[in-house]
Length: 319
Image (tube, rainbow, N blue to C red):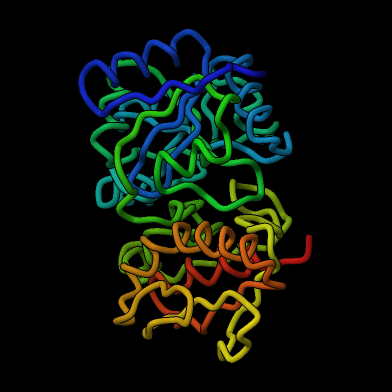
């Protein structure tokens, strides 16, 4: 659905009110969260949810995360067991999504859950997103605000680059602080499954849940972000490179890469925050120089490094 020009809103009271009004009218709007920019629509509206899928070109079997302002709002939609409550008390608002059993009378569009009997819920921490949620007064579905399978957006400019003219507006809340999507957990009475590595490292969670059962099988879709090929630039991505091939676009870690670097100091928090911005820039350089590939230096597989490696491996997957 073409909109003509996408409106750019400021992160002030007027911008928040305008964004909430557009969502209430069934339109879709790019909104900042602490993880990445989300493509926001009314989670109770079939039309709004269909517009999200249409704008992204997203497969209909890929569920959407529902963003909420309060724990009370979450309890109206889903059943939270003792583990889910403990996780919510510790990590909400923040970069944690929980996949929980739907309650009867939840009121969500069936497009949100992709026909599953569970729903992915999150309380975002970004003050602008929280203000829009409060002003709108209902659940907002918001996958990442980018064409499906491409690099996730961490600035309003990234949103416009992918979706200009296909969405009503984008609210410019500046760069996202976390920079990778939320961690997705499915807490149950028999243990907690990790469905997607993300902005909350598993070490932070396991003290509360006990050992997580990793269930991030690519292509087995129980939660958003589990498609095998995802976060992909136009050029092929090669991981764990020694960065010796001068014909490629080279991305360093813990050193200044010849072209770009995720972090010169080896700080994984900084690398996560920079990841999608650097991939966007590498994609631009690859096109400009007609480079055959984007090569990325090895990233340690601990803490946030696991989420970074997850995104990079999906970016590098055959497509």
